[in-house]
Amino acid sequence: MFTGIISQNIKRLMKLLYIILLTWLVSCSAKTQDLQTISSDTMKLRTLTEFESYVIRDKGTERPFTGEYTDMFDEGVYACKQCGTHLYTSNHKFHSGCGWPAFDDEIPGAVTRIPDVDGSRIEIICSTCKGHLGHVFTGEGFTQKNVRHCVNSVSLEFIPTTEKLYDTAYFANGCFWGTQYWFNKTEGVIKTTVGYSGGNIENPTYEQVCSGNTGHAECIEVIYDTSKTDFKTLAKLFFNTHDPTQINRQGPDIGEQYRSEIFYTSAKQKQIADELFVELYKKGIDVATEITPFAKFYPAEEYHQQYYEKKQGIPYCHVFREKF
Image 1 (tube, helix red, strand yellow):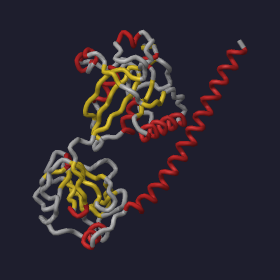
Image 2: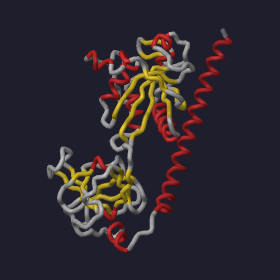
Image 3: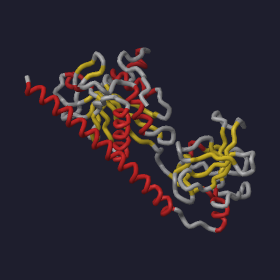
Image 4: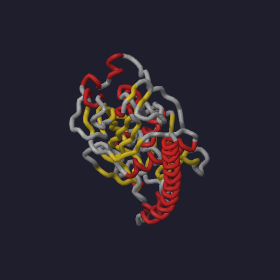
């Protein structure tokens, strides 16, 4: 009896020490990243021509219908000429007839709006280097978004691409039917597929996974448009739609395949997952979510795909509860 109590206390102590260490590492990482951002912003600034400097640094304007990108609609990304930050994608671009490149949206966080010195317009600048881009207007009715970023071509650099800017994330938080239901409703998500990951058997069947002998978790593969959403937004949705304190279960579903787990595909994804883990812990939530490197994903049987869409139902154990 006493041995069991001591063992439980040791496990609690080890978990507490892990969380303290993780909190310290996240804090140090954030401080280091801030310092790197400050120095890299300075180091990345490119040498500009006299006219580029006039527009980007002195907030000048190029003459209408003279810019390189006014009538360009190739697929790719428009980056800041001064620092290289990605600002817009070709999906955001439209023809307004105003004489300058027009966009009805931006890559999240890339563009900052500030009052213009003329007192009547809103200036847009690069969020990274503060270089002048142009002005933003609303209510003109050019597109459904009803927004027009009027940007100087000289403030931009076009980067052509043959592929769309997509990324992939992998989450496990109980029955994958409910997980897929919530991610399907999220803006920027291109495609979701339910399946299995984290185990030691290739191409497992549902019955094998349910036996508890494969090590796999019921998982969802999320392909998303990085110009419309990001990993942090998706990871928050992951935490908000299940109980991350439960171990090897979710509601009435019990077994290791129903565990809470994030399979990260990059160091950046791991950093974000760790930061959210610590944030929830500080709120008093005893998170049991595992954060592990992604290895391989095996799609589940067809009858599992888009289950609630086919049945016109709602999840029985995945309920949205805001935790952040």
